Image (cartoon, rainbow, N blue to C red):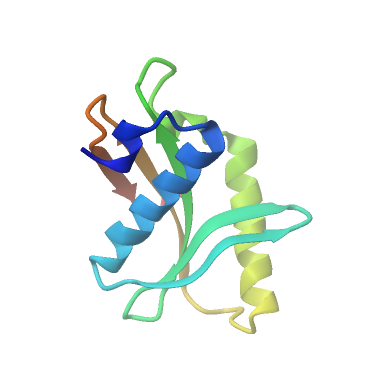
Length: 126
């Protein structure tokens, strides 16, 4: 049984568990993790990764225990999507990578009652 099944997770802990699950998912696909929880005044990017091709991926992670309130992807509003675009460009500029190829990706982590974490990953959603 996983750690998520053994303890009742707070929303903050649940989010951190989901983000780590996605990090493990990306590392398993030989994708480099460049930054995590990168924050500026305008907001935060959960995961910044880089593919072997050099393309950056700015990843929004949504984690849920059930679909009772909809699929995790449904929690990404138009406003959140625009904010992710602005944050991605800011990170690229600050890190002297402006003009490099990038995508904005989303990952949904759904934790089953037994604690099994299932990842659904979508590339280039914006």
